Image (cartoon, rainbow, N blue to C red):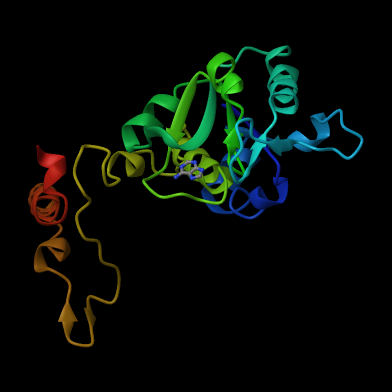
Length: 224
Ligand code: ADE
């Protein structure tokens, strides 16, 4: 899978997408991440990419032309399944949206900044809009990192133990069961006996029951 990210702040991606599982996925050739600076597509001698909004009002708006030129520099070379704008008024991101995106070959993530993006780009070039939650970030960059991370870890071969993505919270609509590691007793608190029993079937049943209980208690909305 190839993910192209269009941003005014390319440096924001160096940390989050170059560590851990995402780093391994890229090193193994299972995912490609390409970061593009929208400013490189500005035709203005001062490399301007934003301007005042028509009708007045506080805040700058990202201009259509540099963003469209950046999108078209990619879509003229290969076909993209989605051109996604990261925005708080988009569709709510979820595990099921991540699952769907992980089936694509090429996607573009466009990060907004300032007051927003000229509406004509959204109307004519963006195919989907995604929000990572009901709060406003300074820009779409952190949201794009969240989406890229959640999607890349689902690609076949990325996780060492293929079943571990399947047992993630939300993957079956439930929260995960609690997990423990050594020592079996820490400051007097013991690991549940059943996990030490070696009885695979009983352990699976216990985990399912814990998952259900935890979901009922913490996120009853998931059971509706
Ligand atoms: N840009 C700013 N806030 C955002 C959010 N919550 N989700 C996606 N993109 C954003």
